[in-house]
Length: 386
Image (cartoon, rainbow, N blue to C red; front, side):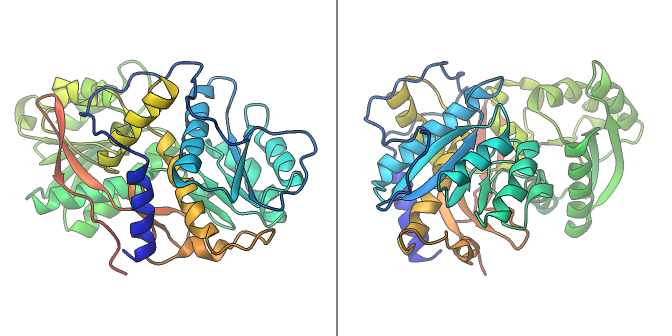
């Protein structure tokens, strides 16, 4: 990684003090209480153009069913501003719960030169054309690669990268035959495509791929069908930890007793995943949690609540913006070309860079669930080779 990336990592480390052990992450309290004076980040009617700071809009749900994660992201962006001492950047929060498109229009009318967010893919679809027309780049927290491109960038953790990483690792450990359980719907479709490509690219073989509906008994029935195709060396379960744990005992019966279970990036955002005994020995790939643990400690101290795991995306989006802002002339358009820096960026979630498709390529580690803990068995690379 280049010197600038090392500096971004230093900023992330400066924001964190004490490492805490990995464990379940409690749900955040509904009313976080900051202990440090925060910069002015609330939207105001008829904001004048700021002549001393770059105006950034944060579009997240601050009311409704997703308000918890949205507020956690907003808190994280505030933390990053304070930790980086970024006095040339002003972030204004806009609630997407009552319409992401309207929030984007208001932000742009009030002078936003860059949009961070939204969180949900449907909100990104509403915001993207508005922002593109205004020539305002969007750095979204969605994991739906289908909404990236044309001035919209994705920081979310995508299943394709996680699946490729864990399949490649498994193949290197002697796994040759693979099977999969994938849910119906867009996530399952993309996971299936990524799985087939990853196994083919690694020189393995997919012997069976079973879809299922997310209904009571759905994955159990699919696991029974998969058992008829056993034996195989490993099974990818492209769903959350609770669903995977329900299928695991069925997959481990009879000829599947020695089957290695594989998970996706969804597992890393679940509290208590390692405590699910049925998943003992399973592998999954995700961003590293090393710096996140430090960040979570400082977040708890400041807001008296635990962060949502996705809030690190907000923190890292600000680190990225701070790095670019060093060469960003005041009142000039955001230098979008800088987002495609070949050496990438670094933050709480490790190294990442945006590809030509606008999706963040991430340096991922492989973890194994082992006796109630998650152990890193293949560390994430520290940067990109080219």
